[in-house]
Image (cartoon, rainbow, N blue to C red; front, side, top):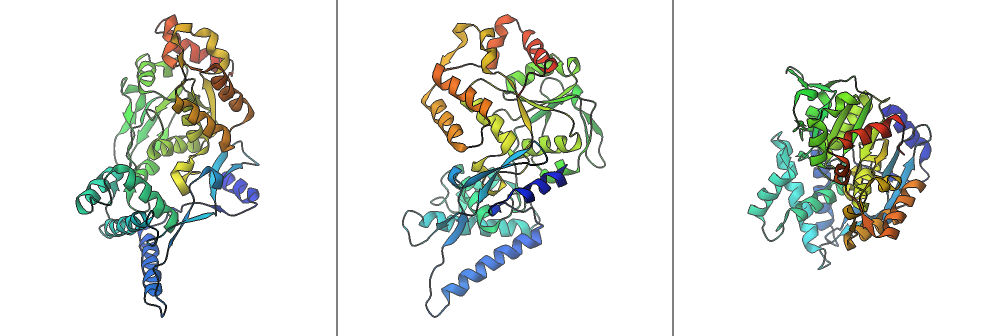
Length: 382
């Protein structure tokens, strides 16, 4: 399946599409060393200068959607338009220095054969350079700058994903040399997804499920797990508790690769943020830079959708907030939405309302499972 996806990518390109490689530590260290040597070479030239850092732009205007020719899978890629970090521009000087500081830290991590989370890296940098890294956001953005500079993944840099994800249902997992974990026996809390992508890659997966269901919200995931919905409709439930982290996306991708015939369905709130979360699983995210395309899956939208709204009481609808309208505009202008998704966003904006999955409890706590089961039996997903 993965080879087929890569084949469709080769057929597609009418321009250079950029991505981040997964490479061994020795190659990452070599790329860092070359960057340092090139910087020093220009600095020591007869006309010395401080060279700018060329980074692939992480903007929708620099993104392209790869619609597979031989599969239904579509993925977001960044094109080769470049922005720079320059020490000579006052508004970019700190960002320039941050890249070199994080590059130094990653080099040390790789030499020590360690892995750290972005949070651990933040505290290390905060203690050493508080004026450069006053917040986690500065670290996260700089990591993406370094990915864009060296063209290698965060994991290759020695940075682990911090996972919030959970999984439950008709799936067994086994780490090499360890006991089998039956995800149907993990209770309403589910099984916590590791942030170690190397460990997730080595998992032995077995399942007799018929569907994979992405659940946007933790509380809904707990309800379905507690009701053991996955036995009513043989399924695997997975949640990232909102916008997906890399580890949750990677495990979903692994499940999709191991069981390519299982439809992947998404249960989201009816609002722009819910659709944006679905699109991150389905296409990737420009905000993830050169790793945007990686681990995209062919996700179908199960609900809540516009034609489900008559099931909800009027009192359950709440007005759209300015942030909702901002997300809606971003989705529409992104160019990634298929026509029926565009229609849903237009309906949200036109109505000025949003609805949450929990509104289905108006019909009783057991109605949620019946709602999902009916839609699956009727193949009511797009």
